Image 1 (tube, one colour):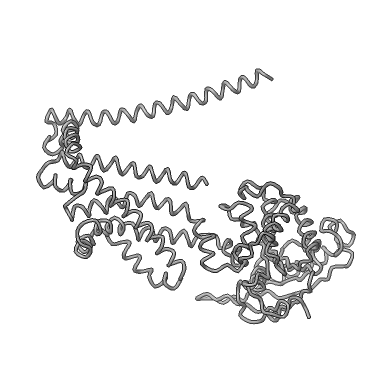
Image 2: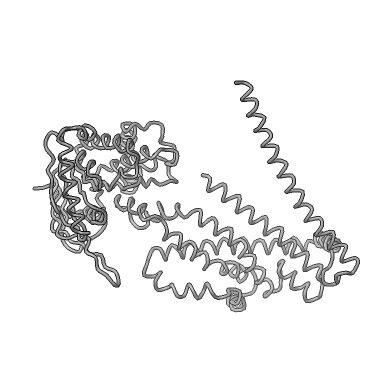
Amino acid sequence: MNKETDKVELLHKNYIRSLQVEKRWIRFYQAIIFLVFFSSWELFSTKQWIDPLIFSSPSKIWILFINKLQDGSLLTNLGVTLTETVFGFILGTFLGVLLAAILWWSPMISKILDPYLVILNAMPKVALGPVLIVALSPGYPSIIAMGAIISVIITTIVVYTAFKEVDPNYLKVLQTFGATRFQCFKEAIIPACFPTIISTLKVNVGLSWVGVIVGEFLVSSKGLGYMIIYGFQVFNFTLVFLSLLVIAVFATIMYQLVDFLEKKLIKE
Amino acid sequence: MSFLKVQNIQHTYFTKDSRTTALSDISLTVEEGEFVSILGPSGCGKTTLLSIISSLIKPTQGTVLLENKPVSTANNDIGYMLQQDYLFPWKTIEENILLGLKLSKQLTEKNKSAALNLLQQMGLSDVEKQLPKQLSGGMRQRVALVRTLATEPKLLMLDEPFSALDYQTKLKLEDLVSQTLDEFGKTAILVTHDIGEAIAMSDRVYLLSSRPGRIHKTFEMPEELKTLSPFNSRNHEAYPSLFQTIWKELESLEQGNG
């Protein structure tokens, strides 16, 4: 009896160990890719196998990074872009869900608006940039609007579809209790679609970055998008790459935060 | 005057290129405290009829009177139990059973403790804080029954509530439901395609023909079966012959259609 349990325990330990070993190998290869990429970039650039003027090099980017940190301009620009993205993304998701709720509320409105939603969804929203900038004045309002508008229609469509797919029997249960349409929405539709809403948050994080960066290209006064377009105009590609890397890091962080939020909320 | 009076119900579903008459000329009456079953082949409009009686659907023709007044979902006169439990998975058992009271703004301490008591009576203790997914199918259907009874409906609609359960659970639950309804003196209408269940549980069985659904025949259950619990009814000597009679009728209906 005792021997049996010992054996099982041993097998379990081996299994856990094999998982750990696998995980270590995965981390190892990930680190290798990272190191190979940056060191060959550095090497190719110093050996002039690639044009250092266009492709810059990690060491130059690093030096510029330290410089820009010290003179404070990087943090200012980063702060601007982050604020715009966060607001754009929250506003886009919120408006999208609100619009989906209106469509669910009135099947008539939903039928009337259907072709317009298709058109708006198909249209590249960044093309509205110039109009937004003129209408809302260059700066925060127009760029946040860009960040929001790029995700609002797709959120509406995805969330509205989820609303419609809620099992009608849940609504039947509520209706037999004499529930109003608002009560049906609050008790069944929203909680049932909560996972969908959270997962559109994840998509919208990425989309809002696109909207905001393009907005900053157009307005060209502040932010990481401005740093890219400025670097491009004065042919300082080190600045362009620095901005790109910073964007990559912070977009990932935001995505991970939403992912964390999702795990936290869905669990409960 | 009858408790529930269903008069000349006809219902037609319209689509762009078809019209389907689901129910035609249905009239029936149910007295207070009675248990009535509606039996029929699939597609005979049983669920449509229940939805009409509970005023979830407005019939094309005809009226439904409960205690001489037209039915409405607003007064919580009618409780509806579905084929599956449809407990809300994100709500705890307690939130689920109090849902009806909450929606109709009757969530008083007294009603709340009555509902929780009923849960105890159903043999479900210490589950209030659990989520539906932690319970077995039979337990969940019992919770659904508590949820339906919590608002104290005058009339109970049972839309094949046992069909998704395994046989043993189903038999146990039939007894429990029947006993609970007797205790509270509730009137109930059961929709089923299970002949045995209809015989065992009801005082009267309406056999519906299909397409369009009409009342084909009415079977009054013998006194000796009415008083027995569903499980004991199934073992009573009158049961097999009744089963045979209804079975043959149902067969002839299906052949007539096929």
